[in-house]
Length: 283
Image (tube, rainbow, N blue to C red; front, side):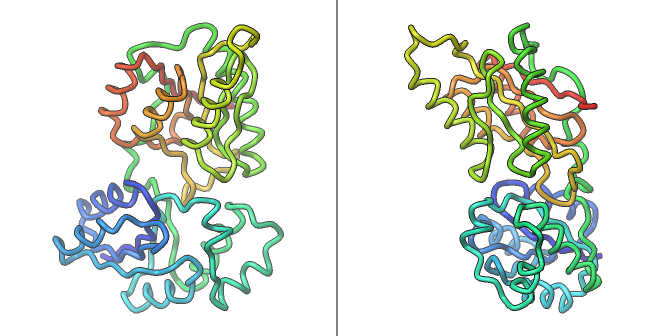
């Protein structure tokens, strides 16, 4: 059995690659030149059932030709492609240019959904990126040693409403809150950068004059109609390190719809720093 893997950045492609191989798949990797870690070449060199072809953003026709040539009829997207890359680094081929001209808007969901439809029309089904990684989805409840305190619970409740509204417009999936006030909203820069920006903003406030509690609560949600084939919410140890540097004390994620990478190391680091992590179910 062959699986196509459209690989973005980070560890997600490697985790999915390992899970797919454990289930007996040969994997045809389409590595995005602007994003994918070159380490994927080493992984392929060690396993003859993995092949890697490097493509640039915008080469949709080459992607389809690759999968057709390799007999791929099912594929998965894994790993982030930075939003700013999508809209600044693309040099579209004729097929992608035609697709872009027909989009009503150029948000991430619209673009990736259109790419998924083109692949489907070519006989290549794009399947959920969590199909191989369900054990990594956050289960409902408190995940850390410490539970959120009353102030953090208020921040989570407030943040869920704001994050849900922002995610509904496909702007971002994360908000950073202090004393039930929104300090930062994720946009094209991504979750970790939004947290870092919140930390810088809080650090710039006059501590004596500020009425805001200094601790930050990070709330990350899935989109109301989250397509689990792409742009799935992900938390990794880098997020925890960024929270520590920014002054974050609590992290809320959405249960069953958020992937936790390096879970043991992530929770160990959070516990060391006294960060509370909770997975909630939204109505």
